[in-house]
Length: 166
Picture 1 (spheres, rainbow, N blue to C red):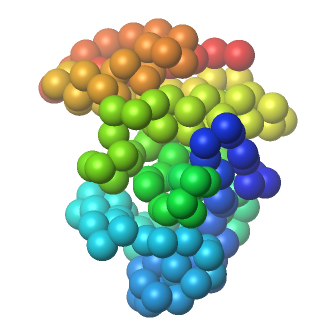
Picture 2 (cartoon, helix red, strand yellow):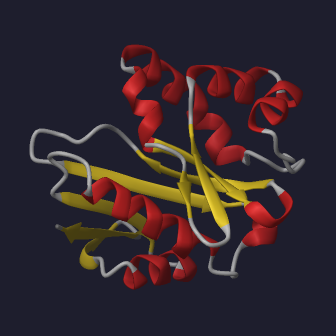
């Protein structure tokens, strides 16, 4: 993914150097991105999956193009991430996930970022379907997926499955 710009955001794709710095050297990470990184970034959930992301990127560096860091333009602050969990599968399906730092929620940033990523993905060769999941009690996330035009598929074990087809 080239860097994506929306009216208020820049979605910066990962490089192996950025991911390595994100995991090991916060000051270097901020310097490479040229942004302010909030003290509470990346959050426990994202921090836990970063080594897996690095492993996958090591196997196929193209994955970095499908991972986005959400930067608020007005003050060059890293406010979250919006990622596809893998490259498109054989059926052309990709799964999207996203999250914002707590202080930036409820302001439309997730919707803006997810829309940009969805638009980008559907312009990639072979992508036919985007899926997502969110907890039943995550009303804000469900609202974002509704706004994208995603269709609720099912609910199982407290998780709602969604899809959007080309």
